[in-house]
Image 1 (cartoon, rainbow, N blue to C red):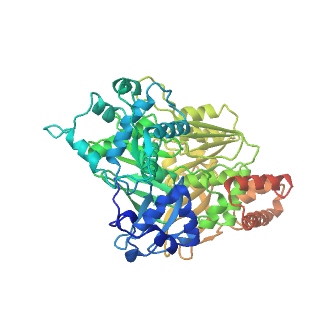
Image 2 (image 1 turned 45 degrees about the vertical axis):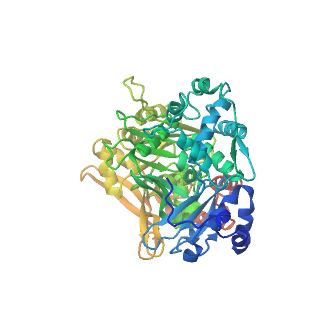
Image 3 (image 1 turned 90 degrees about the vertical axis):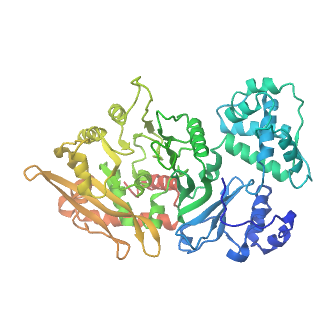
Length: 611
């Protein structure tokens, strides 16, 4: 359901503002954008906006974090595939509105859409329906829709005639009289259901195309592909690369976490339990993990790689079924983009570069949504290009630029067949695959013990971990249920602590609070020695190199490997500064893409500028 935060003005053909009038008021960039055939509905949307109250929205072909400080944003930007997004201001709430501008937004198509669905049965009957490739499904639907709909230039403004006929079909109880099997098919099967069975019922009916306007046809085609091939009303949110998370807490609105505008409320909402339950059941079936009252929790990946968690039913979720989607980023955020965001600085990035190149074991730790996986992905560009990497995850989120990358994912089943494959199983298998680097999505249980055994035998390990400080990380590692022996913990070399913090004037940002070195374990006092090498200063929002001229790993691990004599170990800090300058120059050359940085570092290594 769409719940717009304003009362739309009349459409141009119903006495509203003309398209020509609104078009002439737009910027040249926006005029060019709405002039494209697939974007005509966006001009119609602007025609119906109460611009006297909020003003004309600004148009941004691309948005960036530089506009994050706008207090009451009123802007439109493209989301891809003929869709746009309106960030609509709400001065009465901390959250502004996120409005997907879809071709069907103002079209009243419930009756006509149902008629088209029923007629599609006749067209599809006895045809080979693609079942796997989404693009083939899309092309198939487009083709059969052309056979189902007749596009006419002019139609009656409303559907009074259709509505009248529809009412005549109602019986005394108020239910509609359908041809035998129509209601059962429409409610239970959908377009890609038991088409041949339904087709037997309608095969004898003469095919008569449904008259529609070109705008109605575009809207019907969009809705059909969105709902039957895509993820329904969530499709525009999944298309928008600026969204990080999508959240439905039960009945009510869907919320999103936006890269630029933080938390926003969408115009998409669920008002009835049956509607919400039906939607989450369809989602679970589309991802191949059907949900039931017996097994009410699903944690899996969407076709685009996004991570989804669903909790089904009011008995376990009192506000109704809920779901959360963590969006998959097509190209990972790079280390230099994190420098731009203020998450880390050049010297810290250079430090991580040196540590990972030398095979140091590293944990990236922090709370929920602190950016741990983002940081680990970004840091993989520093791993030696010739490395064989094995990654192990519950849900595939890691992205590695290396060609020799083995990607392994756990498997869970809903029966007693014993065919589950756990992180523990995969990690044991990885040790036999002779990897140069083992990457673990997150250590949570007994697999942590195996990870430290891998470190003990010389394998380099990198992982994320859920802990807000080094002390808490060690407590969790050595306690139940991970139970890593205390004498093993000093095999972990570097711990990076990351968090989401509120910065005055900037809002919620992610910062590396500290980078720490684990120096050793004193068995007599049963205490761990560690030092912070870098520390974030919240007063100035800058980073302090607290370990300068005092880094255990740089002086005692990295310097010897680089051939620096023991009496000259301080030269290692000059090398650190040199690498920080290299990263700065790469950034100044406007090379910020994840894969481009990886290729640039390879070229620098081949040229003998780094080792």
